[in-house]
Length: 407
Image (cartoon, rainbow, N blue to C red):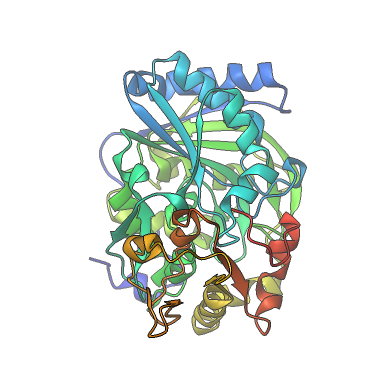
């Protein structure tokens, strides 16, 4: 499936053929609600999102990341979320879901709330979804171990990637395509980063996107992130909203606009090669507002942050340690032994021990954290490995949650 040059060059770009893809762009310099609403109406009607939403359920996969104030530019801005949900209902959507699985494994609800996404969604009449709490669906991906997504992600009529424009220490850039990694429950995201082989991460992401079949991408690029993204960078005014039914073209345009070398974003070439969209700037028609290229270009991650990009085994080891840094545990004092977690665990990692106490097998556990929501008594919480705490302490600190279980 993959040509030889993808095994030997730093990055290869595939070139699409056939009809040109369209990316719709709206200049927008601030998060004033009326301006954002007007911009999204123009983009949604232009790219066909509004017409496609009529009479359908829509799942908007936002980027909650690790949460934190909107001004830090880690997450999709709540005003964008609110205006998009309102727009979809105005165009006849029957139900709009807004959800994510946070990079702070097991703490998605806290991340959505701290990013302002929960309140924004509810104000617009949408339903907030913690993907980790949905009924798990196993996905076949070329990664070590099992990975799951939620049933609602696959069963909704339209899946829309509502991304934040950011640099990324490993992938170079994260936008509409890589945002979909957050459809995986819990530490499944870390397992994708452990995919073997050269550029294994991007191959696995392409397979994930192929299974998800997203229909549209909407990009929050009013204020993006540069430097040590996707969480430790600095906010940067970029001044645009963009949307397309071709997520590859959308990310390609954004990289060009912000001065990111396309050869530093391997995912674009792999996705185009798999037939998921167009990565040829010459075949991408930009519609809507004319926007000048960003100057100076977005600052890239510092060299130390880019080490995993250069040393694949180092990246895989790092993400393996991050995967096991947090695990679910059972609080025996609260457990009623109802067995609900046993019957709903997709990995069959929970069982009754000989002394009739429940036991979670750490070697079988996929760390999807579905058990947190399946326990009606709140008897399951997230435990942090003290030796690995430095790897995830910053994520938890952003949410102000320490070792607590914030479901």
